[in-house]
Length: 249
Length: 339
Image 1: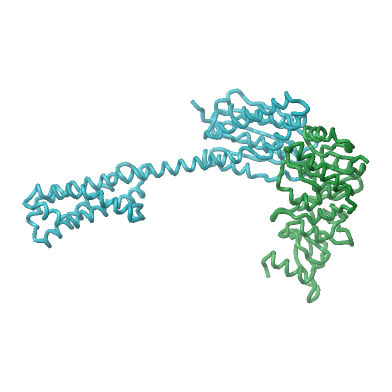
Image 2: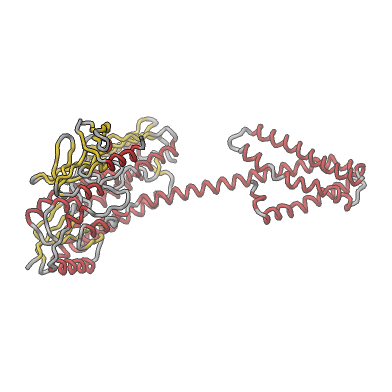
């Protein structure tokens, strides 16, 4: 059985090098090449490849965002000139992390790793892991990506008003619209800057800048009023967290 | 505190230097009156000790009256007045010692000559201190220049640019060895020139633009038809003097944050005009406002702003204009022509 392989890199020469290195491999079949993140998401979802070579920095969507948006159990090998993403890549259950430029031997070792991994019966669950992917301290998501039917919708973190937990999903509210994403609210909370987004309630994560005032409902419950008028329930611990961050009384 | 007083060894050396000077003063006292050498030495010993310490005082006076800023007359008057007062004080110490030893009358004839010599010694000490302060200032300036160069060298070659270019070369060796060799040479040209320019504080505008061209030649191989460049630079800008490595980082930003992050690529437009006393350079590039962030932004721009500030004071301007899909940086620099 051949390994159906997809290459996603925005540089033509970088793709050509991978093609060249893969030429002699009997068990590899290249099914697609993509030059940006959108193309990669579309192609991975349609073609369901077994193996993906993925650049990190690409136009439209970066490599990590691509993985978040695809339903695939492909083995992923990151190929990039940046060494700072290695930790995140392994948290995303990447099979390997190739630093450009690399030798044929190093590339061969990577393919061997892929072959043992693909033969492995354990299910691969990288999208779930990815959401908990550890980030360097102080490095938080600047934007969120959501699949919207066949399209991809990008929400810059600053335009997110609040997120609401709904079973296995979160509803992302931004500029009067809402988008459903398969993710837990805790992992979303971990990915966003805690100085900008506060867990005001077990089910709500709120953009601090949007809060106009906090109304007291009863002795131990409050409601946060946002600048678009929406009211978010606030728990006792959420209220304490808010007071801590704004430093007031 | 005075550097001589900061450790025992330098204080000892300073005091030892006063043995020959003191010997001259003793000899003068002996020759101008009836005192024997031993008597002169006894009378002058405390005065010489005081003089040795007094001659450290110019350190503070010289620092408060730097050669560059204060007027010559003011400096001269200040030091002369100090010299007269201090040499008079030293003479008083001498006379006091002489009276304790009962040798006033033998010492008196030597006083005018000794006063003049003390005054000269004090002025010499002033000159020495100025020289030492100048040397120190020159050394510090050199250290600052070195640090700035080092910083520039570190920041000018972006490692990811280098790794991606090497990866392109690696790809080309298999498919097009001739092109691979070309790319090696382009990369070497760029690195060599950027190291060479980095050693200089300022370069002719034409040289800076040539470096920019070399950088774009390398990126052209990586990005192919995605990267398009249009350049309209007037010929009379060529010999204007600009800070080295001022333009190239702007072009690199345009590629990294603009063109590289656009699926279809785009065009970088550069223009340079000389308008009387002003050199105006504008670079603009399209960008994708929804692109994932391509790493640190603004750091390079801040560096450029600081360099313009330290070089031209408020005279140079950098304006950044961000529109929905385009980014534009305009520099306006006072023209200085290199000879």
